[in-house]
Structures are given as C-alpha cells and as structure tokens.
Length: 210
Image (cartoon, rainbow, N blue to C red; front, side, top):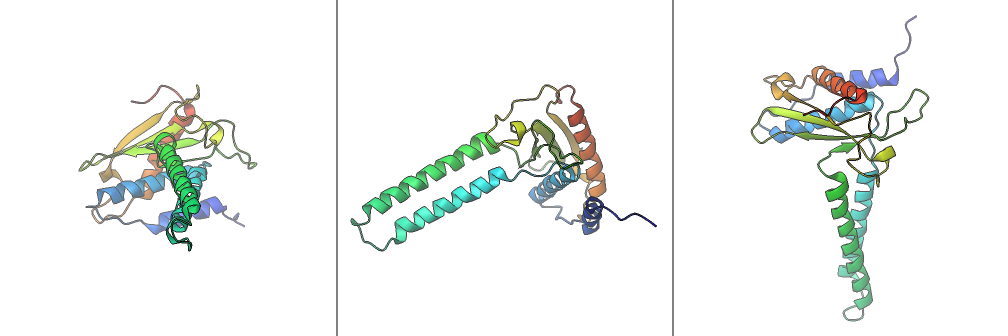
C-alpha cells in the first residue's frame, strides 16, 4: 500500500498545478512573481517566513491612523481639545519616525526575511535566518536573486549585515527567458531548481559571490 503524501509534497504539487501566468510586458509583475516563488521555495526547504517586521509595521500604521483620526474628529472644539491634538500629533510623529527607521535600516532592499531553518523535530537551527533581495534593471531581462544572513537568531532588532563566518552572501543571475514562455506561463520547477542550487551554495558557505 503506497504511503500517504506529506503535507509538504501536497503543497508543492498544488503550487506546480497553479501554472502562474504573467503579462510579459509587465516587468515589475515578473520580478514580483519570481520574488514570491523564491520565498515559497525557501519555505518548502524549511525556512519559514518571519513576519515580525511587517506585523510591527502594520501595528504602527494602525496607530498612526487612529492618532490622526482622533486629532481630526475629536468632538471638543479648539482650543478645548488642544491636549488631545498635542498627544495625537506626537504619537503620529513617533510612529512615523519608527516606520521610517524600520524601512531604512532594517527592511533596506530586502523583500523577505526567514526564520532559521526548521529541523525535523520542529526546532530551529541556531543562528540567523535568510534575508532575500533581488535586482532587475528597468527594461532588462536579467533577474538577480541574493541570499544574505538575516538578523542574528531571527531577531527583528538583530544587526543586519553581520555575517556568520560559515555563511557569506550568495547570489545568482538568470534570464527571464529561462522561466517564462511566450504566453507568460512561469516554469515553476525550473525556477525552483535554480533557487535550490543557490540555497545549497549559501548553506555550504564559501567565498562571497560577486
């Protein structure tokens, strides 16, 4: 009797059956699709996405909206509501400053962060997760994917760019023609193979890629 398929295998099959389609004239759309699929490939390899930064940004954004609404619609007319306006403006300014700090010094050029790799027993490996970034010049057909060590131990406030000795930044570049046909269908399995190769090179360490 054949063994039941794992949830990981079923998830992978479902992704392969979706056959993503993109407008070949939408360069940003193709880059975004590749970015999203890269995150999926790493998740299937045991690197779950770390949503801490984006959750914090959403909370700060909500706080800013509430502060702005209170300052605008507080029922007491001016100058009786001066204290509420003062507090709301202060909260709005602080939240906006923190958001700018996160975007500039934490998020940087990265489009995703992962937790450290998950072991078979469900525990996480020691050390940082992976920070993913990509690059594709306007009107160009070359897509570059970069894997870098993320914040230390997967911590949001860890120092970005602090490289573990055994792991360096790894990157690779491919032509869009390798992954999209003339109808805009994406060859997920081909892209997965390339990302897995890059991930193995990253996990194996070695010299920093050019």
